[in-house]
Image (cartoon, rainbow over all chains, first blue to last red):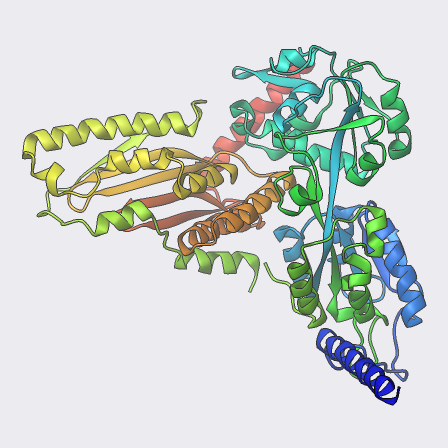
Length: 367
Length: 227
């Protein structure tokens, strides 16, 4: 009996010691030191950036407030590009501390940060997100490529060395292997992140290889030619509540209708909707993680180190280190983490560990 | 260090590795013949894609080398490194060189001329001219393709080639300079040269006059169109 108790106590102590050593290794000494005497310019962390990342940021903010007794961060969703513009505008209480982004910071944005003396940025990748093309389950599947999508959607399409008003009425007219159903696409409102992603990856991606487009010098002209949708009723803007109304609208639409949804929403409606392959590849955890599926984007937080408090506790805002600890924790972005509910696809385990260590060391981002 | 200055320093330091060229360097070398530079100029407005242009230039250079071989005997085919035309054909094959060229194309450049110095060692230089500027989506696409390439081929040669693409893109994103042309020398030693041009050029008096004339013409055409 006594031996059993001693054994249990020893086992508990070993487990506790192991847990403490993991924690000690994961969170560098001094990272989370509290400085009650310090002075801060702003009470709450200000997060700006991607609208589609708002559910993730909100979940992290709630946990942050509960776990670390830090005032819940203020979230200003303005889109990734506008978010970077605000983030890189300067240092001080009036500028955001964190930007949530559905893509990596661009060189021009980073240069803008450097111009404004924001050199210390910490990049925190949290995982992947994807969009899926869906059709009705009862219809023949349409094997899509960015080129086919562009030819189905654009107002004008290349024919030889000219651009002509989109003549395609049926999928088969674009490619003989496609069904003879009429072309019809349901798209989210142009103000949404999903629509912007669709424009960038599928429309610009589809038209990029046409020589008549490649020989257009000005990017603005090319973008206009690539993303301007046809106006003959074959492309329908469903408005902002798109994710909710698309499954029902699509189910009631004629054969050949296709929509685009966040991957996790598409998974939830597989009883009625069929997820379509792009370039012959269906979205799945595997094809998203290995980047073989086209409609994938990596989600990031960028944290401004200059807004963290110094060793005396003075700075712009309290809690940025805790935000990094929370956002990179396994509870949040690990397999079955709480961000999984919002459709986050976790990074591979080794990459998660490596990037958490880099983020907790407050490693400076560079390009 | 800003993105631009970093890019310029990097550009100065980069020497591209090319497996075919490296193989060529290990071949026995014959006595030097007189070098006769041949420049194949290509109309950049020609809608033919780069592959067609390379084939065209390859055929042209092939012709010259046939003449050289005929004139100087079989010695050349026996002892010289791969001919420039073989090098040019190599550009089209499915190795990393082709990935590199495709990425230069994605970065907004197109083969403009292929310069071939006949002699020993032979000299082959491919010149790319800028044919378009890039949209934000193009930049994201290049970033993603570079990352995919890095995963497929993390080697040193590919890494140097990726550095060339990154340099091109980062210089072009600066406000003050663009890379007007890229000279990619394949033989005798691989090398890349960038020609930088100011985005707002300090034009001479004649140029200003010409520009004003063009603007006047442009306004007149707009007026005619409006009427």
